[in-house]
Picture 1 (spheres, rainbow, N blue to C red):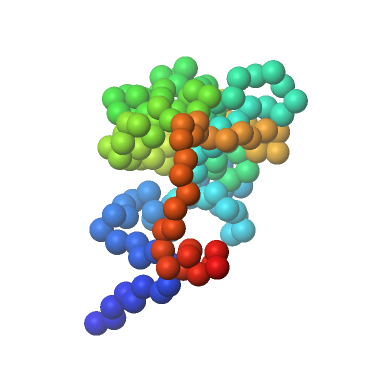
Picture 2: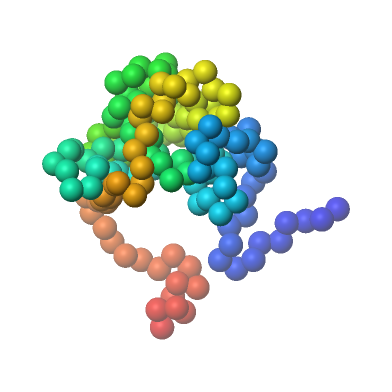
Length: 164
């Protein structure tokens, strides 16, 4: 039996925490998300706060997929999702991700599963979600969360020795 041996500075991921949204065989209808060199395939849906570059639009939450961003404010208006996913998308549609972060793991998970299902190849939501896409190259990004207070501290012996 092979054991997972943690290496310094590399996290150990508990396989029990992974689910179908991490399936390496999953493909998206957003073609750029299927390219080998893509940083944001369907298995990696990171959040950001953006607006169209050179615009006076409000900043709002979004999720990267391929070379696109799913505009959460536009997605919220569509009403394509229900329950926890809808609640999370609504919370993430604002000018910061603080409201979404406060909702916790069950809501975050519901949003991830809903986006994964909607962006997956063959999704019945493809035509509706396509209207919510903004090209990353057309976006301007900002800090995704409002930081109320911050205190730096040593997190590990590696941090302390790197500083010294």
